[in-house]
Image 1 (cartoon, chains in turn yellow, green):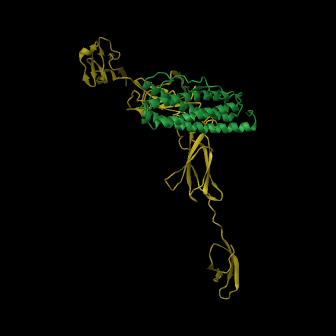
Image 2 (image 1 turned 30 degrees about the vertical axis):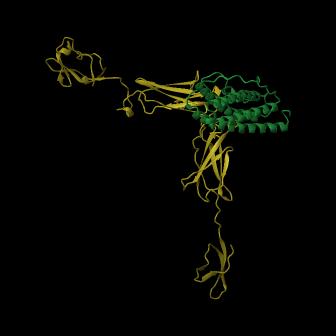
Image 3 (image 1 turned 90 degrees about the horizontal axis):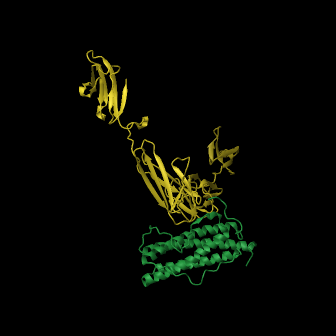
Length: 336
Length: 195
């Protein structure tokens, strides 16, 4: 069956199939006769169509009422090929985007990343501008992730603020958001890496924790990090905290014996910025003494005669029993 | 004056750098507290932007990583000498404006002024150790403070303190670079990484 698409406001001309212009025809729309005033010969003329004129149009030859032509007219706005997931969704102009900037590689530079709080269902273009005082800086777009760009610091220790403006545009409109910040304020390292926690042999209350500087931090020697350690036994909710101004290891000395612990570490530049997120959690249990295997040598004495009946090794604490021959035996001497 | 390459000079160099870092960090902490007091006492909004203040040495540095040890020391020394003058002026202005009514801002300013003086002296010692001539302070009379309205004075003071706080952080970084490269490293380039 034939479908004809037309835009709202367009003028539509329909021909009655192969009929001549001067043939006598009757047009019907959705089963209702169409008035002759819309006809130009055998052509149907619809001017400035609106959505209500969508429907089935049929053309019949004058006297025989043979159906000569039929089409479904669809009047609409912008057409978009819709994905199955998007059917029934409204295409919209963008809402105010969400923007964040951070330096996890101080003093090299910083990055900004963004996203829309809700989808628009049509393509969006993002434009970002970074201004430092009077100077416009270039934010180089990352290949991955997509909505991210990075900037190299041209100056360090500047008191002049940075202003980052993100504009998002699509076919239906635009929106934007801005961030203004100091060089120091956005410094936030990545969490420490390779956190390892081990029990300490012969020390039931100790756990040795070690970690490494995040690999994204370019110069930990000149820009040292300080660390925050938190730990708790799995069975409790309260964390213990330790702040460490240098070094990448620490020994916990007040662990509860035999309990499994969960441990995390965070990092911060010694002088500026904020704490990183917590590292991946590691689990460890302090060293515990192995229960000793008690091996007892026994001499089995016949309780009636007092004579030695049998000797053998018996594990555990049993001190009397009945042998296979029915005799009762008592342990008269035990050697651990 | 020990030559820059003897073991005792190395030790002294390391010692001066470590103490300098501690001084700078304490100074930064006190300047931060002073900023809070200043903003409150002068009735200012902490978030206002102040344009670059004339006569205040900017802490901002391009190609900071490439500076030599000597350059770092000279830049720092010039800055803290300037701050010594500026803070003395601020102290004078504050006494005129608030007088006896203020018991908090004056002492806080004086304490920071003391630390700035001490740090400048500390930098001079480091420069001497590097076998460098310590530059003489320009002129015996400090330049007259510019004629400003009361409000302009307050804003200028804010600018001075903010820049000083920034310098304190930079000085910590500068001294670490210095410690890393040892005495007499002024001939060698500092960290040659691309920024």
